[in-house]
Length: 116
Image (cartoon, rainbow, N blue to C red; front, side):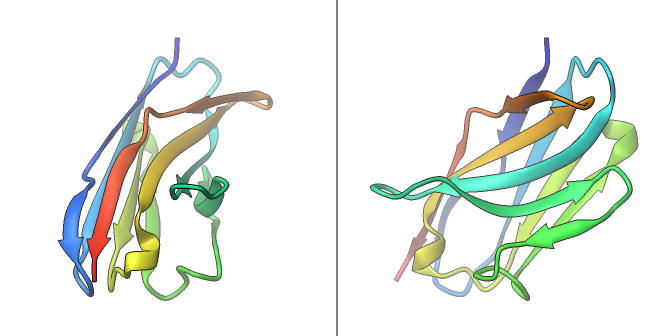
């Protein structure tokens, strides 16, 4: 069974940085896509960034220029470097992967809190 373990969340002040990590184990078919979503209290979960196994990346407009997603295919690990954090970035961040063509898995979530 695929397991996603997230780490790196925490409490920071406005303008500071964090790096999130997500390590996948139990991958059966191979990861096609890894990414990060976030959900703030009272809001819907939204896509933050994704990266394909080939290295193609996409970002939400709200994080472009501040966040960088990267992956290590050999380790089945994805990272999210978050710079110039804003209070609006406060949310639970969820890692997800696509294992093969159809199977999707989610991490347990890691809290990111940015104080004003």
